[in-house]
Image (cartoon, rainbow, N blue to C red; front, side, top):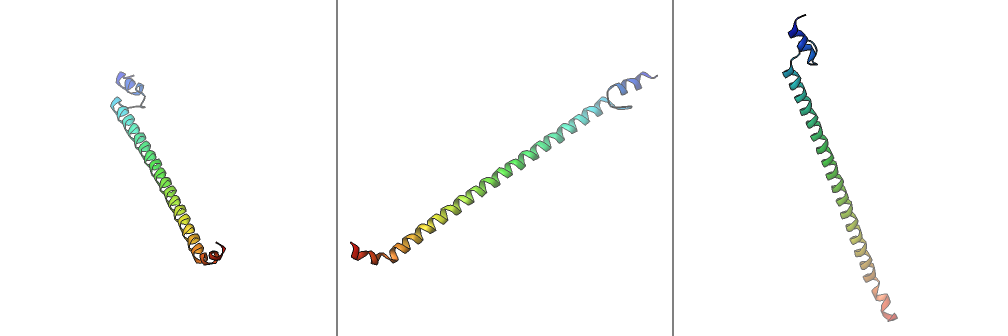
Length: 88
């Protein structure tokens, strides 16, 4: 049995695999993992941003609704204020 062949297969890359190949493979795996992590982080950030935007929109809508209600109430009060005059 040739010793070189034996050493190569002992490095854990199957027959004919080299150490540098294993290193490159590990590096690529780590890079892919980092890319996936960054993608997930960006997705989470976008989701949070969208949630915050929706919350702000809902808040603004509620504020506008309350303002409109108050305005309508004041208008109605002003419309019938003359009825209250003789009661004073």
